[in-house]
Image 1: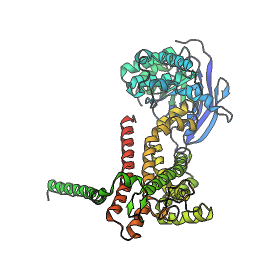
Image 2 (image 1 turned 60 degrees about the vertical axis):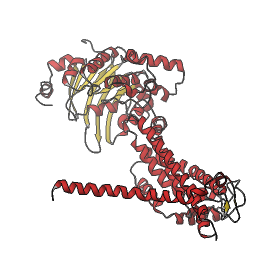
Image 3 (image 1 turned 90 degrees about the vertical axis):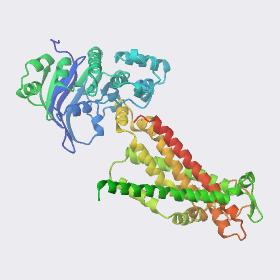
Image 4 (image 1 turned 180 degrees about the horizontal axis):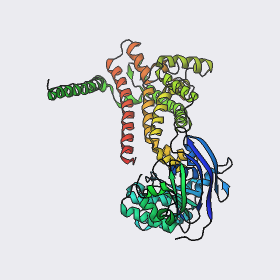
Length: 257
Length: 281
């Protein structure tokens, strides 16, 4: 439960994004994401939540974006600017996708893949990073004795935690999670949600949950998106108990969705 | 007619067709083995031809084919693989890219004898390489390009897009992603394609007739500017140009070429099977 406003990590100013086929676009989005908090983006599909996530680490550059306006300030720097160092941005803003995508390598190589991309070779540093990242992702105990095994030998829930560890290895400032538990069984989901609460201490979490219930469970701050428009946002407990907008209330209570 | 009977007839015809495909292959191989098997001996494979090539061995032709095969690979693989990587990973859908693809398709359709004439004009005469292993390799290499580009591109595209997305999201540049994830995963398919493409070139006669092959050479070639004998051309020569050539030697030569090509096929198949089992996607 948060009472005072924490620091703003990301400020979005009048963001608009449109794809060539007109889908999943955003318009007029202005909001803040807070440091060391679990910031939730929820709403029915097609609302623009994934688009927003992918714009935050410029992964959207790979898609067919026709129009992109507005500013996204990460610690005051506009990441949509021409001179933004995208590689550095992607190391600072990590992402975990809906389906776990282990790379076709060993568990060890998966975790340090980002470091290898950055040119890190020192074996001790790599070993230390693997242990730290896997511990933070609550996977160390289960795999510490078989780091050389293929990542595909793991269960779905373990693979997803591996993907989290992979992002954590780069020590990002922000972690984006796009429906990270949608393919997982309830126990794995519970483990991932627990991990997120702990990660909040060191990182800023932005998550698109796969259900309103999950959103309500984990949100410190929540933003409701409907068809590309930011309807409202605020403290988690306030949004889910006394939302200001009628549409938010209808969605939360299940009148549509 | 009842559906059961229709199904049985259809299935019967299809099975017959499958058998019909296999029978000629076994017949061809069997016939050549029977007719030429007797000629095979250690001497046949390692000695030079003598008595106007009616006796002795086919060593220079074997060496020549090996040299041309290697030369084809050296020419076709870097250019072909580079082109495939560009088309798969970098190129968008622009008029230039579409023109490149049309060009590749057309290259694949050019008859091999036309390649031979092209090689003669450009490499042998204009660039003054003369009839040589170099000219032959360049000609065969260009002829093999479309096959290698197509199979390599297909192998690269088969690698799941999600791997590229993950690599990019962890701060990888496009080349890093290709080098660390895409290329290693596509390698088995690429190798298979290269082997099959190059093996086809190894058996060609027309392109090397004008550019590399010689009727008879008393010594083995020792530089890429030398002419060379080669198995396909040698087979043509001893079957049509030499009176009194023992039939067994003709079929023996054919058998050597067949074994060479079939063993490359086998290698490609084994590589493909080994990596298919390991694949996780």
